[in-house]
Image (cartoon, rainbow, N blue to C red):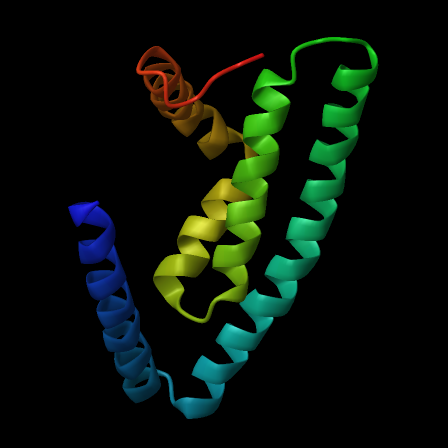
Length: 127
């Protein structure tokens, strides 16, 4: 929980510092254009990737397979879309990484281990 409070303080401060630096280096309008383009492009990309992940998830559920990776991909794409819509460069980079399959494959074992630990401790119960 302490890391979450620290993240809510440091990430916006770093975003603000990068936006100010970008405004001074590139200028106001190019910085605003980059923010708007990543927001609109991120929304479009999140929609396309999200629909693809949703269809895969529905297919797995229809064939009575465990949703496993499809569910984790869907959640990652959802959070990536949220990060891309938020203004800032750090959140845009993190959101873009969550949109592509390669980086998702790299973080998936950590998410699976986190879920497994929660199940082992009884915080997540499967029925």
